[in-house]
Length: 252
Image (tube, rainbow, N blue to C red):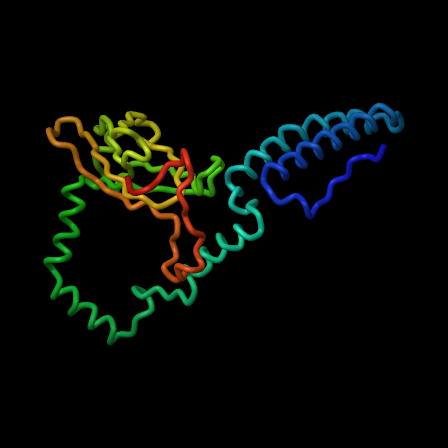
């Protein structure tokens, strides 16, 4: 009976990589322990190999955890990873910080523009004041859920000093649409910034109400949750989003 062999070119999915990772762990630990039992001279080699075998286990487990979380995007199949990498790179093609790389003439024009748009700037400052410095932000990663494209975490962020840092936010009510939840969902996990975790396969608009102690009306916030970030990509190059049975759909 032929022994099973690992064919590297067939290992294209994260779960396959994880299986190989743990197989390697068992093999390495087994070799270390066997060698530690067989080698008696010099006397310090056996204990050293045994200690190394024990240390390898948590190191491998931590590495496997990081592989499935922090570096998950890099473990996608080649075609999907190439698209993900292309989107990241195209966003900053030819990047120039327009607020930094300016000539004296540009600075003069900028000063004139600021003077002529004072009302617009006052509106921007007023937005900070109306929202008490509260904003929604989000992060996403390639999804580990079957039938979904991304996993998304949405949470409340405080700009400067304000009710979130002062512990005055009681709860946050989120509305993502009926394709996500049948009704709005309220989070009161203060220590986690009122984070909400969802999976999706298309962008969506998120509305939220932040309820503040001592304030009658909640502060209304909104965030467009997008994960096709590069406007430079032509629509025909993007991966199409098709509705799948039982999957959460954006737009609600």
